[in-house]
Amino acid sequence: MTVKLTFLGHSACLIESGDHAVAIDPFLTGNPVASCAADDLNPTHIALTHGHDDHLGDTVPIAKRTGATVYAAFEICNFLGEQGLENLEPGNPGGKITTDFGFIAFTQAFHSSSSGGRYLGMPCGVIVNIGGHTIYHAGDTALFGDMKLIGELYTPDVALLPVGDRFTMGPDHARHAAEMIKPKIAIPIHHSTWPLLTSDLGEFKPAGVEVCALEPGASIEL
Ligand code: NI
Ligand code: MN
Image (cartoon, rainbow, N blue to C red; front, side):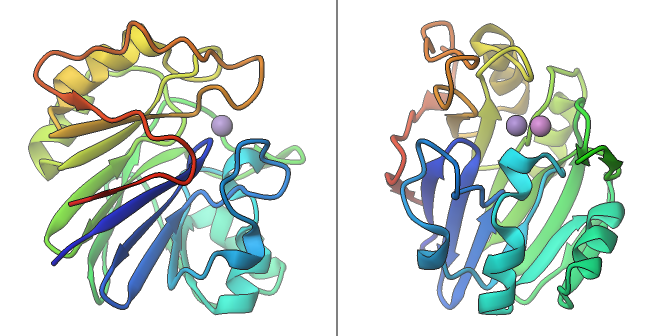
């Protein structure tokens, strides 16, 4: 089945297939490069990589309005439950949750995860299997050697990789990440949003992987 992936700016994206729409890290309000408003996003599912505000974003108002089910770390789901969300699917790195379109799985990520000083569990990467395709959103992470294993286990068609440096991999490390994961397409994310994040992606040239640097609002079809 055709899968449409739209980059929404920063680390946010929307993956659509048939009647399903999975939003990952829907940070739109306060995101200077957001391609749409939170009120205009209508996901059926939301997956979160970690609890930082530039990823948790508008999850609570979007999920309250749409009834979308939220997939996130155990501690994040507890936090969201306290804010009135009911459709929650907690997980942790290494785990997989079967859905009506395929599955959502969590991988490790080397980062931190908190909101307002509250610990929000392990930071994660997210694997979305939908419409016969597999997408790996690495979240915020440093480079780590087990990305090779993630590539072997899930054989993702697309990998969304942070390249902005300072808080995550920069373009040079992300090149190594893409070469280990070996997706068909690598999409750079978490860059150019603010001056602290690099907008020079010149070194992000992984061998054997097509780089698709999407502008916010742009889509690819799988
Ligand atoms: Ni973060
Ligand atoms: Mn971030």
